[in-house]
Image 1: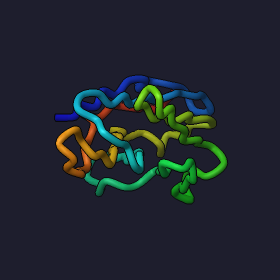
Image 2: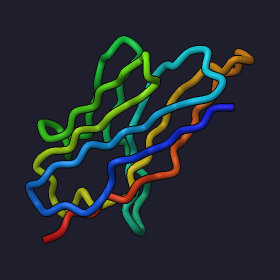
Image 3: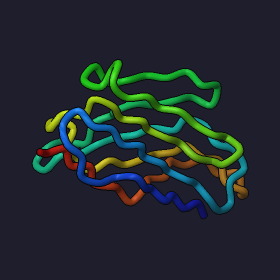
Length: 120
């Protein structure tokens, strides 16, 4: 079994920054893609950014040039550095990881979500 623990959310003023972290633990044989999604009230969950095991990244147009996704494979952790935050970035942010577990089964696992609120 694999567990994900997210941290780093909170309340920030417009123009501010936050850094989200998502650490995977448990029976991990190999990590593939790692992603951040977000979901605002009444909205569908949307992809914010993802990063492959080789380090290639992809971003939603709405966050390009403001957010940076990165990963530390030794720590099984993915990060999302969020700069120049806007009120429309307010959402619950979820990480997702593509994992091959110790039993050699490949599954997607989701974090519990962390609230990001951008408001003055």
